[in-house]
Image 1 (cartoon, protein in one colour):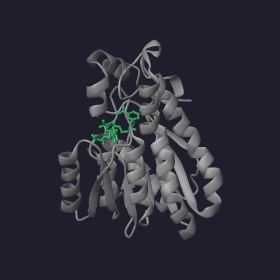
Image 2: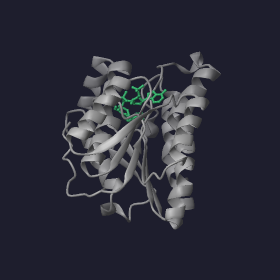
Image 3: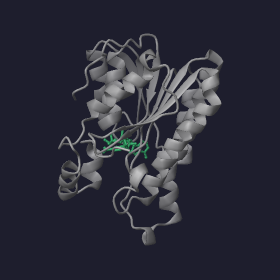
Image 4: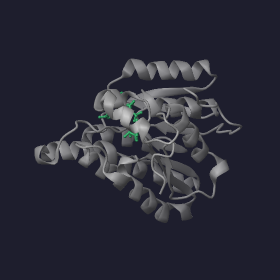
Length: 257
Ligand SMILES: NC(=O)c1ccc[n+]([C@@H]2O[C@H](COP(=O)([O-])OP(=O)(O)OC[C@H]3O[C@@H](n4cnc5c(N)ncnc54)[C@H](OP(=O)(O)O)[C@@H]3O)[C@@H](O)[C@H]2O)c1
């Protein structure tokens, strides 16, 4: 990870819930938020050992936190994390958990797969936001950061129709939440990464596909989770108080519009 710990940013006294914090961008964001002083609730689904490792690294860095499990591709799992989140003050919510689930061409899609992708990437983020927004509005303070994707802008690779549609909706949801909650002191923004070197691509991309992404990226390489985490910490902090409802593309120049 290349994340520069706190970049002078102080999140001391804040509680951050990061979904999908057991690996990749979520793990890097959890660690960077912890290094900046936040108490970090690191959510995971299947990778408990990795989530525990993130917690150990947080503590080694002088931060603290806890881990919580939920399958956000299901209604039950989403409800359980929402109940958890609404039962305590959350200052920073990072809706990061997400996956393509299964690369599937349009003609092969079932209702069940479509709904699973939507539940994981979009619906759970909406209801988790709902779970924390009441408290944030009452305290007139809070930050939500949603994880979209460059796929939202161009439809993604073949077989990513549900995923890219869900991510486009996450970007739009960010603006809708901003209209309703900016007047109540809550800041909502969206991070839209290009191709970042994480387990996502070990699961869903080919070596040739990644070479193509490097070739199409002006800086000639993939991004790192730490580079996304630095943006998450910036958006979580009081150094970005006039940034509301934005979808920030972070992709090494892959997409510049
Ligand atoms: N990597 C990229 O190039 C890229 C580009 C644009 C956007 N993104 C987005 O960035 C976010 C993080 O992705 P990543 O690249 O860091 O991938 P990753 O390393 O595969 O991490 C995905 C995280 O999401 C969690 N997750 C997956 N399925 C879940 C489920 N059913 N319920 C709850 N949590 C689940 C995983 O938890 P467990 O492992 O514990 O199950 C893991 O912590 C995702 O929203 C992804 O769409 C990634």
